[in-house]
Length: 87
Image (cartoon, rainbow, N blue to C red; front, side, top):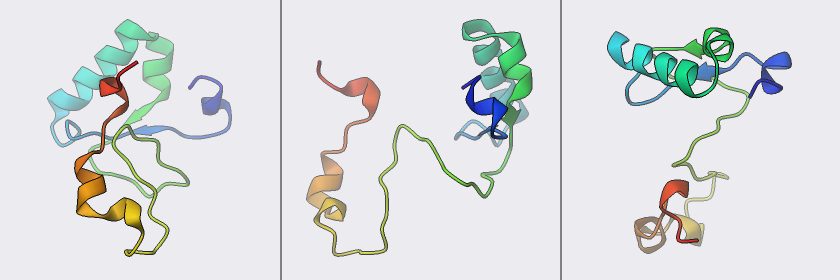
């Protein structure tokens, strides 16, 4: 992320973002588990901004085709976020 900051503005948005306390909790997490320098370089926003690219742990790419089999309810119900993968 620190390398990306040399090229991009990085905005952090989450379901916690609507509350100031949620944004502060995310800032504190980055400060405690990354660095305070990194936390102060990020932008913890209250609304999801327009973006060049979005990185998310619960995201599927949509290519404009609703008939894509990967968007079927059966496939979507099997979705597993990264932190639940069986290794």
